[in-house]
Length: 233
Ligand SMILES: Nc1ncnc2c1ncn2[C@@H]1O[C@H](COP(=O)(O)OP(=O)(O)OP(=O)(O)O)[C@@H](O)[C@H]1O
Ligand SMILES: [Mg+2]
Image 1 (tube, rainbow, N blue to C red):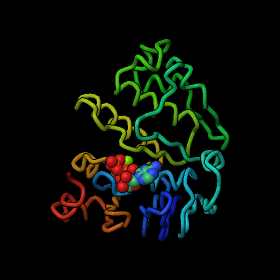
Image 2: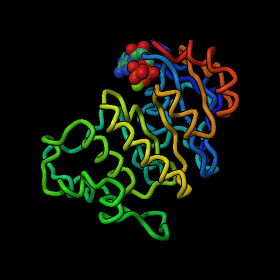
Image 3: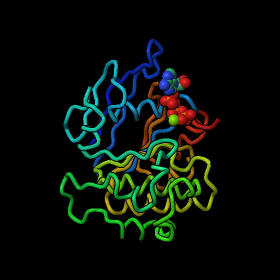
Image 4: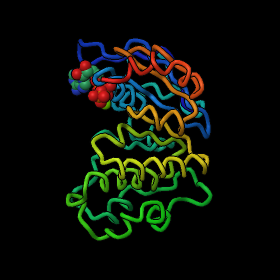
């Protein structure tokens, strides 16, 4: 579904990505792991068309994404839950969910408010509440709900559980598992190896802008010590 080959990118003269390789197949849950500042968010920005790659190739559903503007990439069916959530703080929960809702790909059984509220009962109880007044966990759930309302073929989550209480994290992981069972393709940036080893199919580790390890969850269990060294702080 998504494929990155030898992708490099820079901010001005400072090169941040050197050699990123990554694949997400249909229905797969894949993680993208690495310490702070290694280039995970930059890679996602490059996939989303928010930055132009210096070199390399990015394809999505067989189409070349290289150089496509961000709105086109989103319309092809990639839904992003960005780092820092970035919900619309002046809008209510319900307004956030409908603001960007679309079924451009003509999906059967598209996401509705009712389905989002069934997935996240906390949002149901707070439909009329302003985005700014939600807790961090509720904002994160709203950011996920908002991305789902675009009915994406691929959902990308950038640090969706960062800074959240364990009980809220668990709720988000439960949601990811539900989405996986429904066949949703998902790319996850996170640092919770133990949970991800259980939930995800495959994993990539990035260090200083290069993909340095990749494997299945079984490979990860075998190489746990090595991977942990590259991912833990
Ligand atoms: N707008 C920017 N201008 C210049 N350099 C940047 C910019 N954004 C990020 N960088 C640098 O690019 C490198 C990679 O940053 P990036 O945000 O991709 O890392 P990350 O792996 O997502 O880290 P984290 O886990 O902390 O979110 C870092 O050295 C960072 O300082
Ligand atoms: Mg980041």
